[in-house]
Length: 369
Image (cartoon, rainbow, N blue to C red; front, top):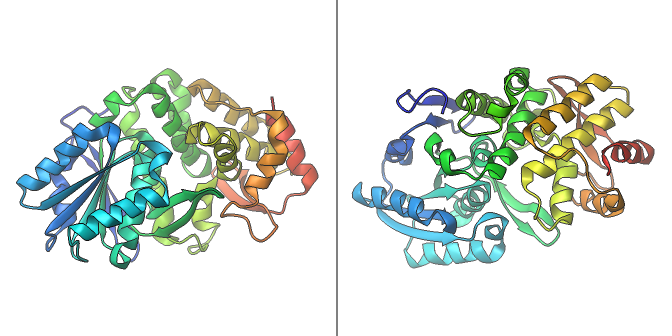
């Protein structure tokens, strides 16, 4: 890992009405008690089943620190984000007589973070939560910003709440055992931050794509820290995606996500999130080019960066009708109007309101295989 195992953790403060810190480094879980703060007696640890040893280790450390701990193992991936799994967590908290002064700790990837945050947001109308993300995607996206949610048959994250955590602990050692495809998926969100706000991220990836494609690369820590800083800066002024703070606010973080979420739904979540939004970002780059907003070179840069990382840039031509139907139930739609985050230039995201059917079809033609 870049920076070495003994380097001090980077600390990124997410501002807003309830500020909190995101720590990026090694051995950061020793800060867990400090983030939980005083007055917490019980801690519910919601951990992904595939991380049972890690989750049990976190639970054991909390027990040794004097907390009464309830460990709740949940399914891996999107299977955790259902009303049934959330209800099982609520039942466990009820059996433990969990009070408003107690806390939740999540251990796992983005789906676990989304679920645990939702459980914390809804139990007694909101209890404290600290996230311990174990994947790149969770570190740079799901764990930061306070969005929580579960899926329904109609789509992804349609039931949820805004519930900022009390802190986030990004332990880089967890990434050493992350499967390669999961790392690459997370890099899509890192690259997204480069296109919408911090082009230095793109420069780092392009200078050493092979290094950026593995967790042991020389720029890992800087890439993660920069991506988190982009998200922290945005959500500090626009937590609930209302456009506060000027520009387009938090909606800029949805770059590539309208089509990306539709691909995930159509593929029954067998595509990884980063794979889907990589195609989504190429699509909106093409849409911006069709509308005369950006150059062909900037569109080509999208393709080259994603291809260098091993991420897809095309999708099946015969799925356009079902993708359009899926996009119309996306959270970013307004009535029957589709809205897309596009670029006016590198680092200048804007909203494209109601692109014409012809523009959308042409943009998709350019990404279809």
